Image (cartoon, rainbow, N blue to C red; front, side, top):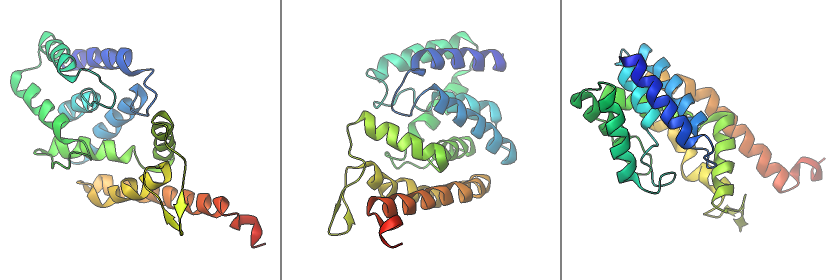
Length: 206
């Protein structure tokens, strides 16, 4: 039953979000599912609930869903049709409600902490860099802007300082913290290279 439910939700999410251009697409959700399963196994969480919530974690987000209430009803019916109990549904929707960085909520369960960590890890590393610029481009943001040597708000580069680089210190599990070390290094290296090239210091100082 659990495998069939996961398969049905996966197909629904793929149909809805495969062409989503903001970096919150089906492939992002699939990566979060795989990461949540990996972390969940190592942290002794309920892996089924981790995977199910990971598939759904962005499904009601206004960034990618115009009518969250309608989406919630469709998904609730889908879960019910595949035998997901009300208790498990409630647990999953609690995770979904608290996964967002923007809301600033703390997950209530270990499974919630796992899914939140998996989502945040996908904002780090090389893929996190690509997703940042995909989102910024979709929202019409400038790449970068400075005033008196200070990075200005509202650009893709500013987003790294505003949010992304804060994520490693806001992870819940030791497994996620270990994975984050290398991914954070990728971002720090990228930003140093970007700013060096932006200012021409990669050739002007030669």
